[in-house]
Structures are given as structure tokens and as C-alpha cells.
Length: 210
Image (tube, rainbow, N blue to C red; front, side):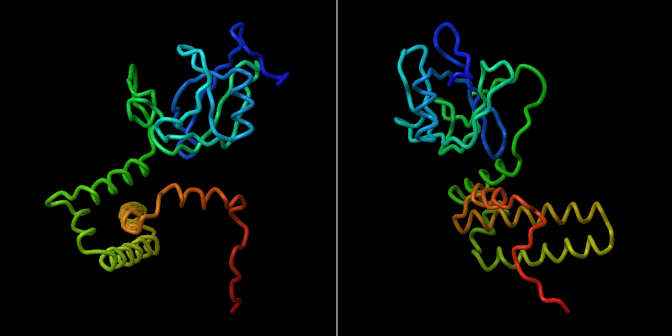
């Protein structure tokens, strides 16, 4: 606590960032009590300057933010929190509070956006949509397409054809996302599994020597 420099109102700003996408979700404030509660419960708790009271994100909406890491800046007067969120960060229902572009293009997580679109297409079928067609045909058709696209990636790579490999890889990833949506697996679950593999060269499976 001694390292943090709270302002004359007893507050410190915290930039809240999505753990998976690194998108900035919101800018909030903490006092000493909300800071300690956040560290204790690993659930983001802020201080509302307008209501002049503590508030735990998600208490009323269910959109809790679970603390993954907390970083202090070089001047010790601002924080960056990386969180895993249960739902939209903004009270408007948007994923982030920062949505109004004033200059340039906003980067985003294309895989997450595509996956959200696929899940919506599963819930709200659209006539003429290839994605809707796959969901209508079911798991066997989706698995067949994954097999086909995997083969196409191998062929493209064996030919050292960069453009073909990229094109077929995109097709494969798309169909894998359709499979996740069909089976109820969240994209973040796969990202969590990847994040747990800290050493990418570590052998997780024994290979038979021939």
C-alpha cells in the first residue's frame, strides 16, 4: 500500500484491460479499501466518484471482472488491471466503454468477433447463410469439413505455396470455430488452455521413436 500514490481525494486511476484481447475496457478509480478488496477477492471493486461509494463490478449486472494481474506505473500513481470478464464492461451493453472513434481505426480481436458472429448465427439462423447450413447439417458435416480443410492446409504447405496455405488455414480456423460453437465450447476456454502452456517447447506427450 505504501508504494501507491493516491491523489488528494484518496483515489488512484485504474485502466482495466481484457486479459485475452488486451482491449481497454474502462477507466475506473480505487480508494484504499476497494484496492484491498480487489486483491483479497480477486474481483474488481472500484470507488464511484459520483455515488461516493464502493461498487463491485457485476453485483447488479452479473458482469463480474476477475482480476488476473495488477501493474503499477513508474510514477506509482496509476494502475493497469488485466481481467477476465463475465460479460460486457460498459453499462450500455458494449464490450468496452471506449467505442466512440475520434481518429484512426480501432483494432480488435478478429477471432473473438468472428466467434461471436458464429454463435449468433447458431441462435438466429439466416436463410442462405453457409454457417447456418453447417449448423443445420450438424456435427458430422462440420467434422468432415475440418478434415477436408486440414488436408488442404497440408497440401498447400507441402507445395510451399504461401498464399494457398494462408487461404486454407483461414478456412480451417473458421470451421474449427464453427465446431466450438456447435459443441458449446467457448473460445476463451481454448485461449486459457494455450495460456497454461507456458513453455511452448515442453513435451506434453511421449513420442515413439522409430
